Image 1 (cartoon, one colour):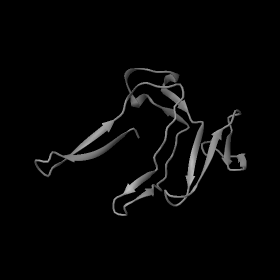
Image 2 (tube, rainbow, N blue to C red; image 1 turned 135 degrees about the horizontal axis):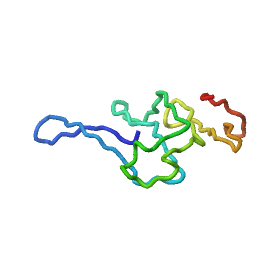
Image 3 (tube, helix red, strand yellow; image 1 turned 120 degrees about the vertical axis):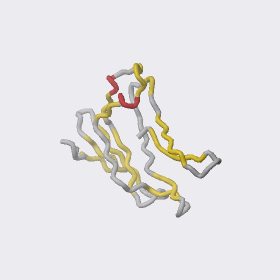
Image 4 (cartoon, one colour; image 1 turned 90 degrees about the vertical axis):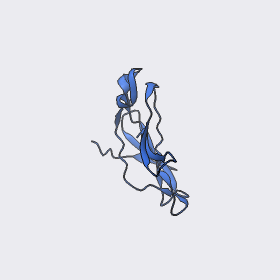
Length: 124
């Protein structure tokens, strides 16, 4: 998730070398906010497109694999999921957002404009 791959050419020959970029943390915050970019630029279409493949989000996230050795950490590098913002729509140019949050009583609540209601937790 935190790394990506691309290729480059030295310009001397036509050989494309594969490279990898990885981000590692030496300190983690008490609260972690992640933004998953679910849009991409389609070179053939010449436009931004929404990525429609399924994306699962764990209820607990261990950040240890993304930390440098001997990182200054809190919470044992573990984070609990407390909310998700979801985009509904066929493309990147329009659609609707709604939110699912963990309430104080540890139950999930959906917030969609004026509608507020209980949400079923698929992991239970």
